[in-house]
Amino acid sequence: MQEMNQPAGELSLAALRPRVLSCTLCPLAETRSNVVFGEGNSSAEVMFIGEGPGEVEDQTGRPFVGLAGQKLDEVLSSVNILRDDVYIGNVVKCRPPGNRVPSRSEMEVCLPYLESQIAFIKPALIVTLGNTSTQWLMPDVPGITKSHGNFFSWRGGILLFPMFHPSYLLRNPSREKGSPKYLTWLDIQKVSKWIDEYQRTSNA
Image 1 (tube, rainbow, N blue to C red):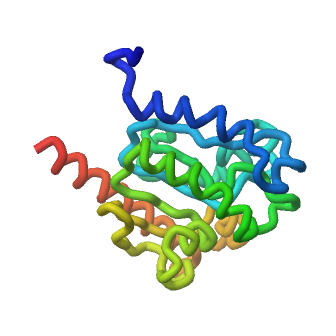
Image 2 (cartoon, rainbow, N blue to C red; image 1 turned 90 degrees about the vertical axis):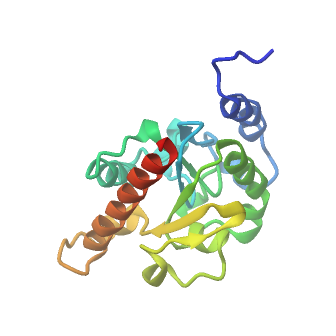
């Protein structure tokens, strides 16, 4: 019986989790150490979606906790966004060997899990991190260098906002104007402004 003080989204995610953790529907199950389900606020207004787990994520079962995750934390904290206030996940839940880009068939197998997470959480804004997650969810948008920093209308009125993947920032450390880091600083400010306006409108 559902407890009145427990969000329905939490129960739904809790029911989904064991199915995902035991999934063996694609070859990634043969090489993984842990499934990385996702974590965060089950009723988050904003959901961040990356490509797939890396080595540290595979070892810990948690998303974005390696070097790229530390960079994401840095980006979020620059505008006072807490990880506990958003939900963070990936297109595929198991690490592709060598951190390669997941194949189309691997992403297709994982898509129902991702769609279920989105349906349960009901975010108003999805921030896609990198080209893979952006074009997987919205194939018609331009590549990440052109689409980042723009809001796109997605299914059911959800907004989609592409940003550079944190690992790309690690490979391009320059902070000069026009660099990926500089552009990401501008982009995350847009996310912060959107959150403020959304909360103000919702509470009006």
